[in-house]
Image 1 (cartoon, rainbow, N blue to C red):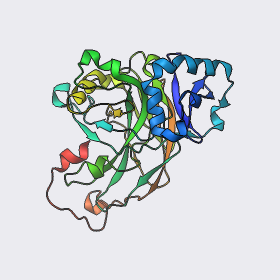
Image 2: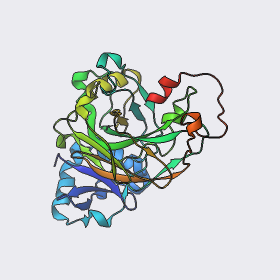
Image 3: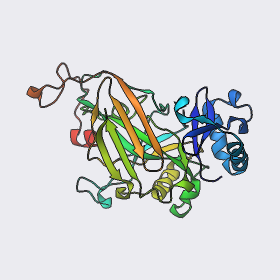
Image 4: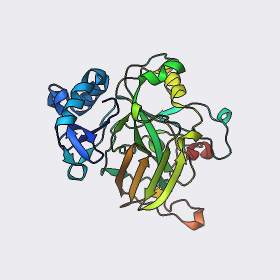
Amino acid sequence: MSKVKILRFNDDKIGVIKDGDKVVDVSGVISHRELKGPQRAIEELIENFGDLRDDIAQIAAREDGASLESVRLLSPVPRPGKCLGAFLNYLDQGKTADDLPLEFFYMDPLLPGPGATIELVEIPEITEFQTEAELAFVIGKRAKNVTEEEAMDHVFGYLPLFDISVRGITRYTRFLTKGQGSHGPCGPWITTKDEIPDPHDVTVRSWVNGEPSQDFSTRHMAHKIPAQVAWLSRFVDLEPGDVIATGTYHEGRKPIKDGDLAEIEIEGMGKAGFRSKGYSPVKSPATGGAPTGPRPSPGPADAAKITRV
């Protein structure tokens, strides 16, 4: 059973999808799971998947499982050691690969799962919160100074992920624009890489309140996953369970505000939805779209560079 969709559900149980619409509990393959905690349990499954695969297949074969609709899905990777995001990594807006240096930023590692809440924190400078649908990959084994040819051996699987980006802040910050808590919702599950023949040729779609938002193919990715793994592993140790988002195609992005439903779906990897809650920026035409009220800033910044990603 090499091709698997792995999820977490209900009270931190680990499951796999059977027949497309059933969830089979395979938590028993991880000893002392409750003591190890949610993240360590999923990391252990990822690290030892080669040895656990047969046991998982046997459980899935003999158990009927519960209907997918009857369980509460959780984040498939609840708190990775590292969650990194590539930015300016798609060939859109007239860009070529030579125009886009390979670079990353840190995202908050507490990743909300399906049905969870995206918190919109009030900051006077914000003009909008924007959903960016992305293909993310999960590291399967430690990677340090690996080559592009070796890189895919270190990838375990894939999952849909939203990078919730903040617009309007022009001072130099990645924390507020890209790193806030709850701004990396993901799910519904991890799809093992065996199920996806080519991660650079899948369709990514998103919706806000049922209205289509983004619709693009990962073939437009400037720097492919092997290049990302090789580059990152020069500077940090990539460990099992780490999550790396690969960037987005900018066309079609929509803003979200309090009460909105944002949904993401990637071909072959499932669909997940998230509710937003909190601040709804009020734009003023007289100020060119900026919110009304005070706009504190500690100093000058390059607005075009900050707000584009």
